[in-house]
Image (cartoon, rainbow, N blue to C red; front, side, top):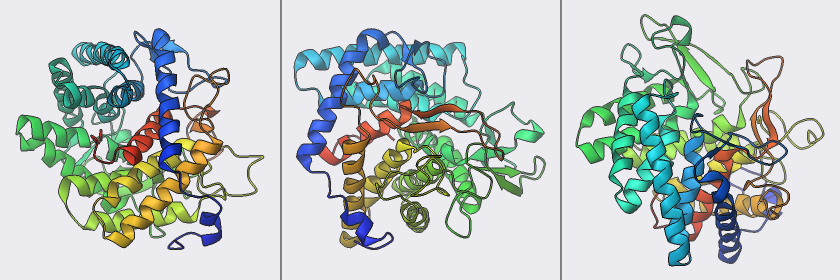
Length: 401
């Protein structure tokens, strides 16, 4: 088990047992059920405040993750009454996403996958809900509209063709699966071609020589040639933003799933190695991987990064030889043991979220963001925590991304 991290660190935590995983998922589902009166017609904010989410309209790039929690609860419901409850809420929210794409409300960015995969692709795949299919295809079209052919990438945000926004960010590795899905259901290879080109461009430039990743990479707006790497949300340009590294882990696993190109296994191993080598002793990273044990009084964790990475380890383990499959599965279960024991919300009076100690963004002298959701629940962390539990408990179930 000492492939890439100190064996003593790994031995501190056992693997989460099936019973522990089941109890944790049941607890998550109960939290979703209890939240529905407030969040069936509304959506949680991107992050909690004082560990409690407030309701709002379907407007942020993060809204789809809450609906994903609802569909994961539907999949795992214990009785017909709960199943009907979750289905009703999921369909209602899918309708909200159809309305959002139809009126073009806050969709001029690349996060169509985050919005429409766990909400609408899930709804269509689980219950063949046609409104959800329509919404997700329209979202895929919107994502394609941000493709810049001169550099073969999807522009992350900002006005299209703006010279100062000729950039992609590593997060988009989790948005492009929407395009592979759209190709499959429409039989139009145009979507898959854009997805393939974007991933190739990303992987050509995003991994640095030490196997860490850039958050964002810029291109010459005229030629599409690589210009430079930078960060918006990491500690500084040269550091490794923990969530970005986790997006790289999960993103390369999904890229392999959709292409079968073995080069992505090599990329996956590189970014995984860096992530694992920079974990603190409780296996949950600080918000940037330049921090480690001893920084707990100054720096917050980002539990969402751990949950995202676990989903990537579990996805890629399906395609590896038995030795590597066993390694990544074991590491995933050990990280989950720590998340369940140390980070999961177990008392509704403390939080209406699922996973404590996440970090949306932390301002430093070297980045361009502002403090948001520092040491709070973050809605994607809640979702990927539930997805990881579901993947372990029901490995043959639908993979949303």
